[in-house]
Each structure stands twice: as structure tokens, then as C-alpha cells.
Image (tube, rainbow, N blue to C red; front, side, top):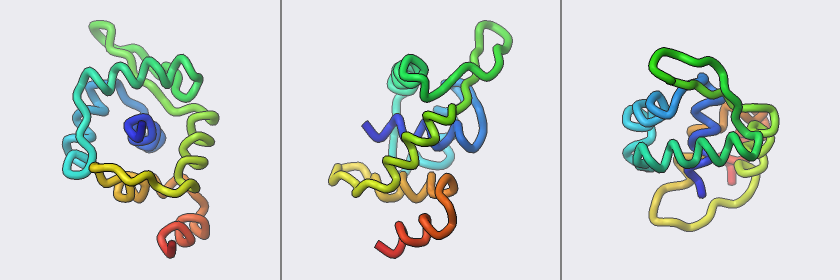
Length: 113
């Protein structure tokens, strides 16, 4: 379930395609949250169907980049404010990766918890 929030947080920083997301995860989150290319593309489709991401720009060879919508940012904020689930993957680090989305005082309060 947290893959969707990793995607929303990454697209909130910079729009990108599924390929871009996989490469970003390899460079930033791979040590705490690994996702296969297929899982990323599947989740992108679900996020688009739910209105949490939208097409940003089309590129060569059918490449489609996506951007997070206002609804996607709201969903990410709501998730950040909820207690993390205990999972084998480190969801806490994933949440910290997306704290840029909260107001500074809300981010500080989250870290104080």
C-alpha cells in the first residue's frame, strides 16, 4: 500500500514517467523501499484512475510522464498524519522522504513523535 505514497511523494517533487520513478527509487528509496517496474506501472494506473495523478506530458515512443494532483497531495498529507503501519519495509523512512509536503511545523511535530 505504501508504494502509492512513494510514487505520490516522488511525483510531487518532480513529474516523471514510470521509468523515471523506478530510476529515482533506485537512487533514493531502494535501500528502504524496493519496487519492481511492473508494480510501479500498475500503481500509476490505479493512481490515475483515482484522480491522484494526471498525465503531465507525452514523450517519444509513447512515454507518458505524470504529475501529482491536488487530490494526490491531500491523500499524501492524510497518510503522513496517520500512524505508520508496522511492516517489514521501513515505512517511517518513506514518510520522512515526503515530509516536504507538510507545513514546517507539522513536519517538525511528526518528527517529534
